[in-house]
Amino acid sequence: MISFLTVLILIFSPLVIAGLIASPLFKNNEVVIRRFAKSFSVLHFFYTALIIGFYTKTSSLDETVFSANWINVLGINFSFGLDELTLCLVGLTSFIFMIALILSKLNIRNKHKLYYSMMFLLETAVLGVFCARDIFMFFLFWELELIPMYFLISQWGDTNSKKSAFKFILYTFIGSLFMLVGLLLLNYYNFSESGILSGDMATIAQNSGAFPMPVLISILLLIGFGVKMPIFPLHPWLPDVHTDAVTPVSIILAAILLKLGAYGIIRFNFQMLPDAFVIIAPFLCILALINIIYGGILAYSQTDIKRIIAYSSISNMGLILLGICALNNVGMTGGIFHIVGHALIVTGLFTVAGIIYLRTKTRDMTALCGLAKHMPVLFGFATIIVFAGAGLPAFAGFIGELLSIMGLLISDYLLWIKIIAVISITIMIWATCYLLKFLHNTFYTRENSENCLVFDKIRDITRHEFLILFLITVVLLGLGLYPDSLISFIKDGTIFETLKHCNF
Image 1 (cartoon, rainbow, N blue to C red):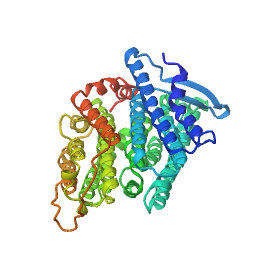
Image 2 (cartoon, rainbow, N blue to C red; image 1 turned 180 degrees about the vertical axis):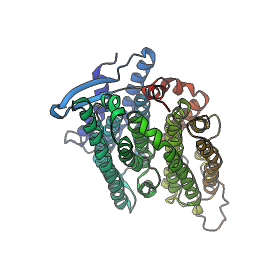
Image 3 (tube, rainbow, N blue to C red; image 1 turned 120 degrees about the vertical axis):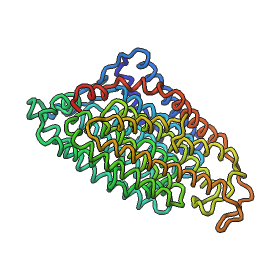
Image 4 (tube, rainbow, N blue to C red; image 1 turned 90 degrees about the horizontal axis):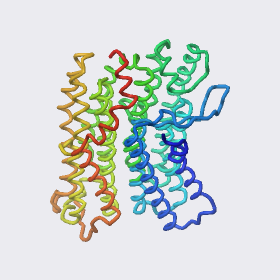
């Protein structure tokens, strides 16, 4: 069995590094800070991989691997645990943060101590959300994430970044207020049922079947998670934040932070309040379909390449939500798989967009022409990642989309859900359209076209950029060609136990 030291080191070692970098003990030397941060992120990823490997080999891991009293009178514990879903998302988080920190060399030119300390503080907050096994500990880390994100968006973004950072904080904070009310109701009704004050997720899940007003509680929680995901109409903050944030921060936001909302829906709405989720799921399917249609149409109409990626994320979050709402093993597997697949795809797309902006100082597709001739290596990687984003077979994106849609098609709890699945398949053609439009207009348009900028000398990608794009494409291909490597890992998790014991 994994020692409690493992989960504590996993979560809090980035926090220790953040404090070390921010302290006077660490000199304000750009090269030293950057190399130290990059080296630690690589070590943290390998450490995470060892934990996952150990679990895969032994298959003997307790749900809660560390627990200590914190506010005993209220039954709030300093409690963390690991299961299949948590380990999957923890591994993804560590990998994406490693990619973002490697990429930071080319994007961050000032305030290095603040930047890298905020990045590691954010990593601890995200890992704490995924590993928390007490509802109030979950909320603590959920709110902690706001502090580093505000600075990361506002201090290193574009001219409107401070306004976008404020919008992000405002939307998330308002959503968190609704979520807090839902968590307090969960705690109260658990106390009224058991006579014991406890924030333990497993204990609350066992008693939740007798709770009054489960649908109201589920909706309150859903508002908080829906803002983060985001679910229409709680999405207006996303495009501006993506556009104004610096590339590594955009990557973290799209690949990891949006997935916090999906994780919250799975862990709370589905696993802790399953009977209420059965009632809400059909309505969520409609909102998910709106996400897919709305995000796809607006992505196609954009000229800023970062806004294209931002709206495509809204569309893909709808697809993940459809998989979750299928309420069967196939759909849930597809939703979780697409969480990973989309994270890798959007990381690649934002990396390509960031490289283009560094070279040309513009993200406007109407001004970008003939880049394939000047940057053939980048064009090759961009083509692969675009094909992956369009759901081409042999890539991870295809597997997640296929399983999510199939989950809806084989679902038998409502007939019209199958209609939504068919419509979703048709609308997903938009993903191919806007991604191919991005690829064609950026790399293929003739240089003598109107409004095109003339580029005499543009350097192709550096070794750092090549390494990042190579890692992303390898993992996308690996998961696409051998999806069972992930599916077999997550299929026996506690989430799927909920499906077995509930009457859907």
